[in-house]
Image 1 (cartoon, rainbow, N blue to C red):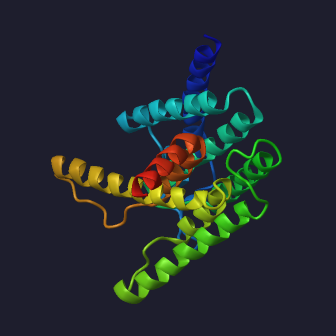
Image 2: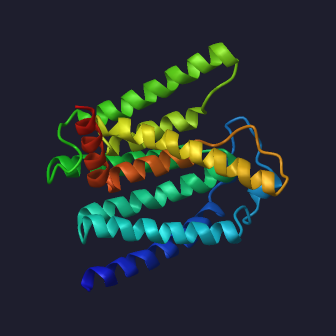
Length: 248
């Protein structure tokens, strides 16, 4: 009964933090939400960048579910506290990249610091995810270099970037929390999430008879992929083990 009550409290906290993230995003410097050489638009200079609506109702519900899930998995612990802070930053990344196609460097830095704290707290305590001291560093550097390589190949073949450099910095930062080889699961989850989001966007825009933007932000998929890899580490590891057992 206590856990159910605390999960409900965590869900309410999730809704409150989602509302707070909207408040913060409406008041951060406009320069954070545009490219380095870009002048902020009048919308960005205002404090009404993010408004309420059906999409934000859905965001509040998903935030409530995410924070409740963190509590149900990690209980009343420092793990939960760290992941709550990290999830809050990831929510702001999803909102900023989802609307303005930009991931502020400040958010990537905050996410990287929290991921580093989580990784080494886990290493020196229960080792739920991180087993070796080099694992978080290898994950962050490895996925960053991998995305840069993919971008270079895409640039050579298609003459355009596959992903923005903001995605590289974000994945390198939050990939620290997954460690190695967990980062491979996070990458797979991010790609799968991106595929589902693209399909969903195409269907919704087709119904609304609206043109689909040529660029689909990858930041939200990275956030969801890393969140699922860290919070649902146990079930995912079990499914992977079952899969490899079937191959034997």
